[in-house]
Structure formats: C-alpha cells, structure tokens
Amino acid sequence: MPTNGLITPRLAEEMIGSRLQLRPIESLPLTECVGGTLREDISAERDQPPFDRVAMDGIAGDSDTWRRGQRRLKLQGIHAAGAPQVTLARKNYAIEVMTGAILPVGCDCVVPVEQIDIDDGYATLRPSAVLTPFHNVHRRASDARQGSLLLTCGAPLRAPEIAIAASAGKANLRVSRQPEVAVVSTGDELVEPGQPIADFQVRRSNAYAIVASLLQRGFRRVTDCHIRDDESELTQRLALLLHTHDILILSGGVSMGRRDFVPQVLKQLGVQEVFHRIAQRPGAPMWFGSGPTDQAVFGLPGNPVSTLTCLIRYVMPAIAASMGMTGDVSERVALATPVTVDSPRAYFLPVCVEHDESGRPSAIPRPTHGSGDLLSLAGTDGFVELPPGPNTYPQGFISTGYRW
Image 1 (cartoon, rainbow, N blue to C red):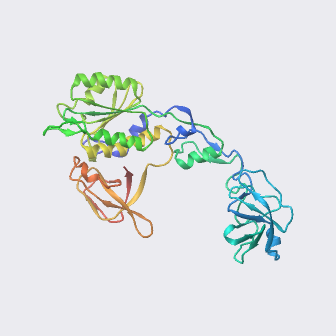
Image 2 (cartoon, rainbow, N blue to C red):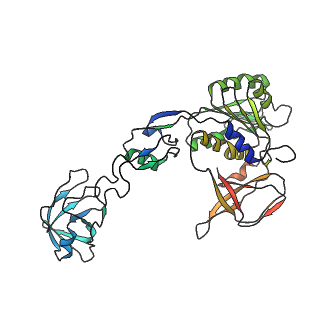
C-alpha cells in the first residue's frame, strides 16, 4: 500500500471481488441466451457427426472397385441430406450424393462433382479423382463421442456456443440471471445531447459510454438516469435505485469538492464504503461500496477518460466474475515504443493494438491531454496498465491490456 494511503489497483480488484455475490441461475430459451454466461455443463447428445457424413456434393461408391480400373459407373440414384440411408446395389455402381447426407451402405469414398463427368445415366471419373477410403467423408464421432463434454459451466455464450448447445439438443439453457444495473450521472452542468446548451454547461456523455459498454457485453437490463448535485434529490433517488437494482454505477460526485455528495449520501442509505481512492492515473477518486442487501455500488470519477478507464478496469471484470464467467478479460501485450511514467501511481495509457508480420500484438501509445480529453480515445482499442514510476518502460515491455 502506498504511503499516501491510496490502495493499489490489484488490491482494489480483490476488495471488489470479495464483496460481489455470484448471480442466481435462470433457465432461458436458447435464443434468449446470447451474451449470457452458461451455468451448466453440456455434453454431446449423440456422436458428432452421428453418422458417416458426406462432405461434398458428388458421387459415392466403393473406392477399391474404382482403384482397380472401373472408371465409368452407372448411377443408381440420388441421395440427399435428411433422407434415410440407402445401400449401393452393385460395386460398379455409384450414387449421386449431396453434402450432409448419410454415406450409403457399401460406399466408402466421395468424388466431388468437379472430378466427374455425368452423361446418359453414367458418371465417368476424371484422372484427377482421389480414390482413397473415406475421402470427403466426415467420419462418425470424429468430432465428439456421445456423452463427451462440449461446453463447461462459465462459458460465455456467443454464436459458436449457442450453435453447439443447439447441436446437443438443448432448447433451454441454465444461465446466470442478468443483474439489474442502474447507470447514474450526477452534476448540474450536464445537458442531454440534442437539448439547448449554455456556454457554461457540458454534454452528458459518460452515461452513454457506460450504457454502450454494458450493451456491447450483452447486458440488457440497464436503467439510465441523471441526478442533479442536490443532496436531498440524491438521497431520494438513490434510495429507490438501491431498492430496485443489483448494481449501481455512478459517474461523478465522488471527489473531494464541497458538492461531491455521493459518498456521504450512500453512507446515509446504508451503503458500506469498501474503499475510496486508488493509486492510479487517471481515476484516483474511484469509490466502491456494498449496499444493505449486497448491492454493488461503483462511484466512478466524473472526468470522461477516468470514467471509462475505471469502468473497464474494475466494473466490467467484476460483473463478469459475478456472472460466473471463466477466462480473463485482460490480455498481455508488448509496448511498441518506450513509455516514461513520472507519477508514483499505476498508469493507464490508451493504446492502439497492431500486429507485426508474425502476428504478435503490440500496443502503440495514444496518450490523452488529461482525464477530460475524451476525444483522444477515438480510434483506440483500449489501454495498458503500467507499473508506478518514476521509470521508463522499454519497447517490448509486457503489460496488461484491457479492451474498450
């Protein structure tokens, strides 16, 4: 812990994790699970594929007969995907087959249409035809055996996982119940986009960034509201939000100013302060507390770069963990150029991530003009966390990166 009493980012992360409760489980139809977190293991309903599957449109037949010189074959018929299995009548016959069909009995090879000529009910193999056993055949159980584990509890449910669950016959999935999240911006100076604005006012943008980040990660139960810097109004409206929501994410009102009422109002409402202020730049004033019924309350600094950085560094990983999601939300990435850190605090540096000819990622620094310089974040991919200074970290220094 630094001598000034501010906690480290790692300790802040641990303290948040120790207070968050694992979300309850609900069962939802498969189509409603996109972006959710799986809370059960899923096993293969059948062998995958469940039969020897034709992998190309073409003809199926006996490869040994063909290799012995039989190159012109009488076509027995057409066998499509979804049709019951048929049997090859004679070894010098062939069956036209469609991709996805079950391989006919007596056949062990598929020659694609590009390697055959069809005329008057016969197929003639071209010299380029490959005639090895089970060529262009997706063998039964080559992907998975019946009962084998396909997905584990904690997996994020993206398009591939949804498709895998469907292939296992799952119409409903047990998933983490999404939290009710309230996004709260505070401040008399904030004006909604599209509304008339005075010279001394600023646009309300932080809340839009927070909501966008939540929606981007699949969270849909999100409430967005704005509260003025009025202690009575803050008390009344935060009390209601604590009663109706699992997570509160506040932007502004947590610094040391005379009108930064948020910490004291939350204390009056029974929210226990877990920490206030982290040894980091930007975002030092961040606040975190736990409500009377274990609500998680995040007080993010009001400057836009600080808001977004703290959201991605602490709030999103915490919510993911409470959903039971496995895997790391961060990544390891090398600096593309040297970076000097003068402050004795952890430094969150915006970066663009590019890849060299070998595919290795590197972080190109894109420093802002301060925690109020939201415009500098345009086109960046996220930020890296660098250790406290004073120090110069060389090109190639491996740091932890977080994506917006």
